[in-house]
Image (cartoon, rainbow, N blue to C red; front, top):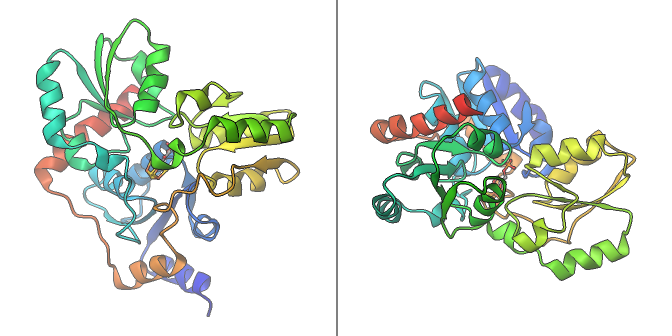
Length: 300
Ligand code: 13P
Ligand code: SF4
C-alpha cells in the first residue's frame, strides 16, 4: 500500500481530522480534510467533532487549536515547524510595554506563542483584523508581533494610537520592490496580490491586499487571467486548482517559508501511527490565552 493510502486508513481508524494551511507542501494540502488560512482553520479545529486533530502548519497554529479545544488531542506532525515571527515577541518585553501604556488594549496577531497570547486581550488573523478592530472602542492599541500587519491596520484607523512591536515575517520581508517591478514589466496585464505581512513599499504596489484565503478568493472572482502573487508560494496550488486556465507568477523561491515546508507525508504517517508530537500546554497559561482567542471569534 502506498503512503497516501496508509495515511487515509490510519486517519479513519483513529478518527482523526487532518488540517493544512495553504503554505504547506502540495501533497500535504492534497491529503488534508480541510485546507485554509489561519482563521478558517482555527474555526474548523474548534467546531469539528473529531477528537484527534493533525495540524499541518506551524507550532502557533496547532497550539491555537489546542487552546480552543483542550479536550481534543492536537498533533503537530513536525515538531521543528516553528514561526520565527512568533518567536520575536516575548512575555518580559510585552509586560514592560503594557506597564508603559496601561490604557492600551493588547491585540496580538494569532502568529504568536501561547505565553504571549496569555498576556493579550484579543487575537486577530490577517483576514479578521480589520473587522475586529472596528468592534474595539479603545483608542490606544498595543499590536504585536508583526509591524507590517500592524501598520496596515493602523492605516485604516487613523483615530487610534498604535504602539507597534518590531517583529516581522522573514518570508514576506524578503521580497523587494525592484523584483516586483521587474515582474510587473514582464507581465504588464497581471494584477498584483499582496499579503499584509509584506513591507509598505510592496503593499503600496498591490491591486489587492488580503490574507491567504482572501487572495485566493480574489484570484477566482477577478476577470483578469494573470496574477503576480506576493505571499508564500504554497497558495499557488489552490489557485491553480480553482482557476486552471489562469496564470500565477511568484518571485522565484524568495517567498518560501522553510518552516511551513518542513511537514512531510512521512511525518503525518508517523504522527498518526505512533501518536507522537502531541501538543500539551500549561493549563493556567492556556486559560488566559483562551480568552484572547475567544474574543477573536466573538468580535470578528
Ligand atoms: P493567513 O493564513 O492568516 O493569511 O496567515 C499567514 C501566515 O503567515 C501564516 O503563517
Ligand atoms: Fe511565520 Fe512567516 Fe512562515 Fe507564516 S510565513 S509561519 S509568519 S515565518
